[in-house]
Amino acid sequence: MHDYYVYTAEKLTACAKIPIQCMNSSEDIFRALAREMADTIIVNNANGLSTKYILPVGPVGQYPYFVDIVNSERIRLADCWFFNMDEYLTDDMKWVDKDHFLSFRGFMDRAVYSGINSELVNPPEQRIFPDPDNPSQLTEMLDRLGGADICFGGIGINGHLAFNEPQSQLSPEEFGKLPTRVLSISDETRTANAIGELGGAIEDMPCYAVTIGMHEILNAKSVRLGVFRSWHRAVVRRAACGEIEAAFPVTLLQRHPDARIYVNEIASKRAYP
Image (cartoon, rainbow, N blue to C red; front, top):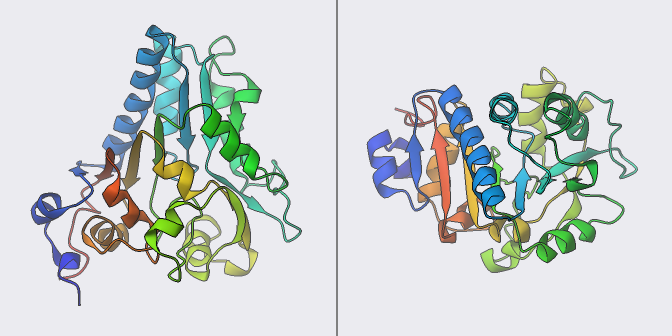
């Protein structure tokens, strides 16, 4: 038994080695993420700087707020580079078709880029997804741009960030150097994702993905994660209070200079009585 799983919200925030910000609802988390996305772009635009984000498709609740803010406040994204974390692959290691309902590329087109006014949205060549045929290209491009300003994301059931699945045989230092790559999705992740996306149909959940690496995530100037499901109660406690280990990748953020996890009222509760 691990004591941190029964920490109250107050003890969690006091003991966390990754700062925890408790919020009332998931919507409050999404609004906060969207506002930080927009505000960083505003500051960088004013200073003549480009903005580089690593973006997830999960969580996604921040995107409607972000689109509304960009359009209503007339924020130009011409100097923004958006690097998406990952994409599902077919069994022959190719991107799933963009029209597939599980496609992250399709989601971003539908939910983000098509909703932003055409004179404000960033050009297609600055909307980057990791390519299974040339995964190092993303790593090299992001390194050349000086790394991400902010990496946004969530946390998987086994502590994964993007699709960086646990590798307990590696040291934290070795795991933290992993670049963008193709990999097999773990049974735990496939099960959790099937529950949320396919009504539990595990056999139809893709077995492979291409993912941005821990190298790119850890080199981001800031990292902002949002968690809000009931099983995140345990995940966020191990993330912030557990041992740093490649067996639970998010724990590596305990060494990051500017990482923060937003939790809602559900995730802030104890994992079990």
